[in-house]
Length: 347
Image (cartoon, rainbow, N blue to C red; front, side, top):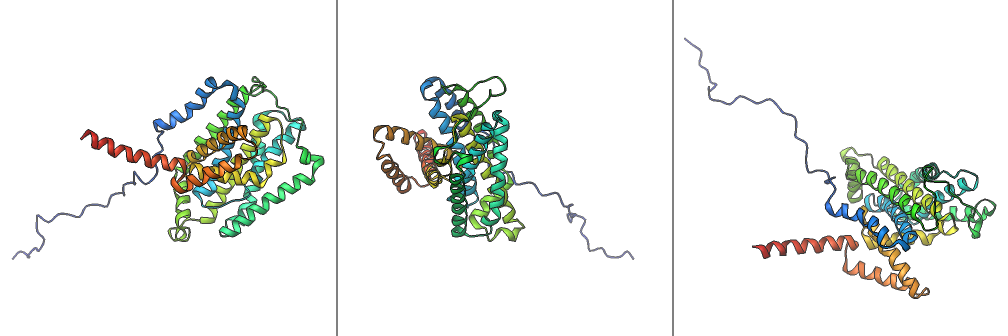
């Protein structure tokens, strides 16, 4: 007699386990959008339309790069800083002192200044990342005040309140000489801003950038999934300080002067205003905030130098009350409101 088989011939066989499919939409889309391309073409258009404002345009791009450096720390990692000008000023003085002592090659001076600011940021990060908001505020403010006072006391090196004069730059790439009209400074600032922005954009759209957002939104839960919070914060704080040093060096090289105001608390405060105006946690918000602030400052100060801060403050209040997320955030909400209405009209 044959043994009774309890297995059904039609019973499906177990399938081998397959590799899990990657989450295609887990990371932000890294493709360049048409509006982004238009955004980066606009400075080149402005070069031909407003040739008399090239110096102002260069300063806007430099300040925009400085604002982006703080947005990395504040907007993505959630670290509030009141002394970010310390890294900006250190980069400016490093590039300026190199030039005064005979190192006039712009690009290498820029890189050395970036390393100096990055090193200070790395050392400061060990105190910053282990504290909470109030501790971070005090540490960054203290570092900024210490560097400001050190530069003021070391007048025999920095020039003190008179500033560091005698800064001269050699030809860019051995070909382009810095001119009084600001043409070389314009393209130099634009090229540095674009290169640094592309690198930072790639970083914030990577898994590392996604981890930073997770730390900002819920830092206490990140260690539960195996993320080293302190290490990530140390890296981003160092990167932010390095970029701030690049911006400071750019300002010193293009204006050929370094003053104590590059280390002042007022510069750090203005930077926070720019981020609030443009919107934090989005690199383009920092650039837009810097653009609006610098243009408003230049125009209003030209009309009434004594009260330009009043109007900037009024603009800031309006943005906070009626444009949540800054100018960029308000613009995005407006586009979302327009698109559904356009679709409804077509139907």
